[in-house]
Image 1 (cartoon, rainbow, N blue to C red):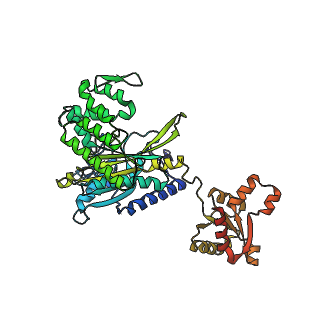
Image 2: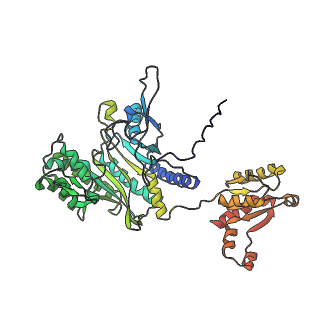
Amino acid sequence: MAKVKKQPRPKAITPKGFRDYFGEEVSQRTEMLQAIAGVYHHYGFDALESSAVETVEALGKFLPDVDRPNEGVFAWQEADDDGKGDWMALRYDLTAPLARVYAQHRNDLPNPYRRYAMGPVWRNEKPGPGRYRQFYQCDADTVGTASMAADAEICMMLSDTLETVGIPRGDYLVRVNNRKVLNGVLEAMGLAEDDPKRDDVLRTIDKFDKVGEAGVRELLGKGRLDASGAFIDGVSLGEAQADPVIAFLTSRADDVAGTMANLRAAVGDSKVGAEGIAELEQIGELIAAGGYGADQVLIDPSIVRGLGYYTGPVFEAELTFEILDEKGRKRQFGSVSGGGRYDGLVKRFIGQEVPAVGVSIGVDRLLAALREKGRLSTTPTGPVVVTVMDKARMADYQAMVAELRNAGIRAEVYLGNPKNFGNQLKYADKRNSPIAIIEGGEEKERGVIQIKDLILGAKIAESATLEEWKERPSQFEVPRGDLVAKVREILASQD
C-alpha cells in the first residue's frame, strides 16, 4: 500500500504587502482616531460606516492613475448560475463609497450632508518600504453645497485636528490651491480641453516639488536628464507657451494680495482662472474671519498634488518639522493629509452634478509623526494582575478581579500554569502591569493581601541601594477590604 503523503503545514507568514498590528499600536491608533472623531463631531459632522465591499461599477474609475476600474483594487466576480455575477471589490478609499451612499439615500439625508468616516482601505499595488496594501484613512466630507465656506471649514477643521492630536502650531501648515486656476493657466497656454498635451502638462506640474522650476521648464520643453542619467522626453512646448505654468507655480508672494496679483497675471483673460482666484480669495477671507493665521492655513499655488483629481480648491496638510531619513539626512516630515472639491463624483449615479468637498488624513503617517514628536506613549500600562497561589481558590481571585473592574480598574487573573510563581511575575512584566496582587493561604487566614508595585520595584531594582530599598518598599500588606483603595493609591502615584 502506498504511503500517504502528509499535507505540508501552512507557512505562518503575513501576506505580501500586509502587516499585523499588536496591542500598543492598536491602542495608539484608537486613541488618535477618537481624538480626531471628537473634532469632526464638534464641527457638526455625523459618523458613517459604509460597507468595506462595493461593486466595481460603484467604485468607478476614480482611483488616481488607474485606467481600468478593477486594476489597483482587490476584485472578484460573484458566482451565479449564468457565470455573469457582479464584480465586487474591497474599497480603495472612503470617498467613492460616500458617493454611492449619498446617491442611494439622498432623499433621507439632510442637505448638505456632512459625514466623517474612519477605517481600513485596500490597494492592490506593489508594496514597498512603509507602503502597504491595507492602511487606515480618516475622512470628513460635505456633500450638497458649492459654498466656499465648506472648503474653508475643512481647512480650519484640519488645523484644529492636528493641534488636538499633538502637532503644535509651527510644526504644520495647511496649504490651499485651486484646480480652476490651473485650468486658467492651461487656457492661457492655448491648450484646449481636448488637447492631449493637457495631461502631459498636468503630470509635469505634479513633479514640481521634486525637480523644481528649472526641471519643470525642461520637461515642458525638450526634456531633461534625470538623476540616473536617463533622458526623459518633454512636452515640446515653446518657452513662451510654458511661461504661464512657471508663473503659476512661482506665484506665491509675501501676502495673499501679492499672490492673487501674480495668479491673475498667470491666467490672463481666462474666465475659469478668474473664478478660481475669486474662490481662493473667499476662502482666505473666511479663514481669517475664523481667527486662523498664515502660520496655520496658507494660500499656496505650489501645492499641485491632486490637481488632476479635484475640480476646485485643493488642500494639503504638511508637517514642517525635520526628521532624519534612513541615511541620516535631515528632511521635512511632509504631507499627512490631503483633500479638495470633487463636484463630479456623485453625478455618475444620478446624472446631475452634486457639489462636494472633503479631506482625508493618512492615519499611519500621522501616527508616525506623533511618535517622532514624542507624543505617543511607547509603553502603555497593562492590567493589574491577580496572581494564583492556589488553583482551588480561583473563585477568591476572580472576586478580587471583579472588585477592581467594578471600580473602573483594568485587571485580570493569571490564567497560565500557577505552579511557578516567578513565571507569574514575568508574565506581569511582559504585560507591563503596574501592580500584582498576591494572596496565599497564610494571607487568606489573616484576612490580608500583598500588593506589589511593579513600576516602583523596577525603578528600585535599577539603581537603589539596600538602605533605599528598605525605606521605599515596593510591596505592601493591607487588609483584604482595602484592595481597591490601595490599588488606586498606587496607580495615582505612578502617573
